[in-house]
Image (cartoon, rainbow, N blue to C red; front, side, top):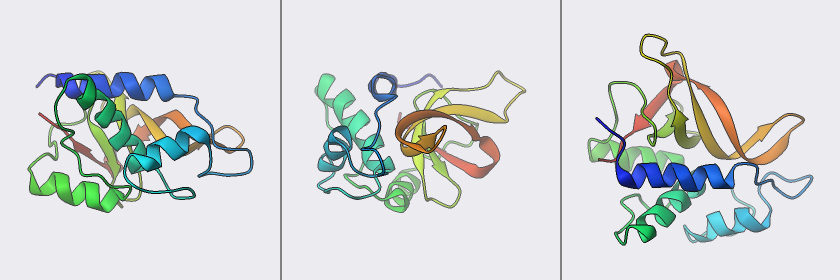
Amino acid sequence: MNTSVLSERAVTFACAEDGTVATKGSRTWGQRIGVYLASVGRKQPNDYCAAFVYWCFEQAANQLQRPNPLPKTAGVPTLYRFAKTRGWLAKDGPQRGDIYITAGQGHTGIVEITPPAGKLKQCRTIEGNTWIGDHVWGVHRRAKDLSDAYFVRIS
């Protein structure tokens, strides 16, 4: 199955946000972070990984002049339950544009790069409310282990 146009555009919006950082000394404050949270009706300080995913899909949906199919939530468990009830949990490994959800349903991001066939151990995601380096919080690309994840595929 190929990446949907909506999912591909969501990846484009996520890539453009890579490197957005939280206010120094904070994980959940910052101008762009406020935009992600506002898209789901939340204010700072709040965890925003699911709000970031929603925001990316909202921008893509607006560009395509269609409704965003995702629930307006900052909660990863809500996103997971929503996807599960719609049969959107992929069973064949990640694809570009899928939504990555940790098995514990505590974190989410968007799959940017998938591994070559036969080497399915990690994928690369773009995530909000995550850190790199010396705890620089914000939106960053991360390598994620596939054995501890669900993948949501919007067709």
